[in-house]
Image 1 (cartoon, rainbow, N blue to C red):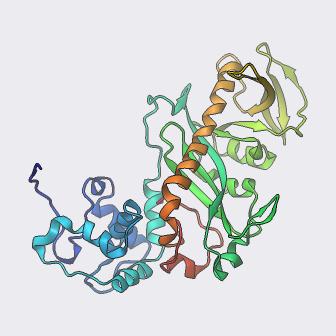
Image 2: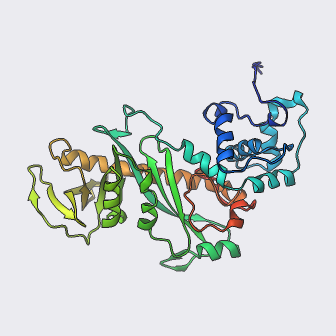
Length: 356
């Protein structure tokens, strides 16, 4: 056993537990206080559990999702034993979370949810364009409470109605790092991905390149992405039959989709199995990168597969977060909330801390 002494600088008095080691460097006190001020959730009187401590407590819970409130509090204050801090009850910590509500945590996420890597980092950019991917997730189940069923309904599958409600999540992430830039949850009657994806368009910026699957080839969505200053590379559905305006030397062609000037790339997929089997398929890519010399069709076909970064992120949410996800509050940071019941937003219900 090796003992390594270190000096820990903390705030004074009841604000001392507002410290999460290295994480505090990225979410400093000043930022948390500003978020609390902007959302009007600063405590009206100084309590044993002030609002700033509540924010860091919520963050600590996402770091330790498998343990209860008091054990999370113990990890927050493990290095502060000499300060004789009061040990709150579980009820006090629950009331602290209810007093805060989801607004400050959501605002904190939106303040820090930005692209993580520099443009020179491999896998995050293509010819000067920062690549981001968007995709949907429909397999995160929630408890079958009356409130959840009234908001989400039940998931309908080919075999019938599933036993539990499920979240329809559409997320936007940076490729390479899979850093989440935003997400939305759709309630009952909002299961289609395209209307939810349109709510994420304001997060796109000039110089970004959106990669998305064939569910996103709706004309309205593509026009909004282009109007935001971003480019896109989207797989077109099999039912789309775009007109050919001009055939380019690399085999791609110029066309129009909903009045938007686009470029169509026909790609072939040929898979050879180890046992000698061979599978082939073809797909169509739609993009606003019209210059065939600067953006060769072969490179774009290879680049499109970076879209799977969002699917890998979804896999992480399911496997790493879902195991203990329903023991935390129902509304979490990172989502641009739709029709979420207010009670579910503040009560300590079983739900998902993913994306926090």
